[in-house]
Image (cartoon, rainbow, N blue to C red):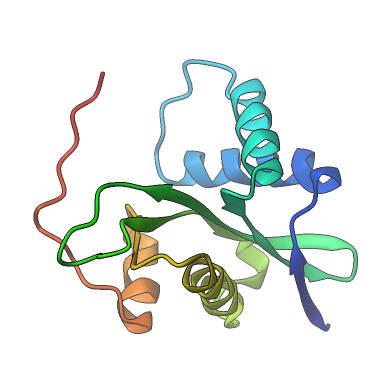
Length: 150
């Protein structure tokens, strides 16, 4: 088995979206809508304008790991003078391929994409499973994060 890595293309979207939904299910999400059309729209638009990038891990032709980074901008602040942020998402590895360093490699590749984009920070809402990976990479908890659902 030789794992290779490449960027997501529009031709990969059906598999990528299927894996994203599997990830959300693993994290305990409640499925009360068909999310596929919204995900297709999001990825197509943001890949086209350069505000979303993903790296994939493959075993042969089979996609076995995914990552994603959305780029957003907010007013600059002391912790991020550029105001550009990377929002990490879609980190998923097929269960048969876990504990092999694949997620770490995917994480590194999208973090480097954020650096190249000019981001001053990367944010993620981590699953319990992901906390160890992100902590080992150097992410720290920010106790100030709050959310208001509309």
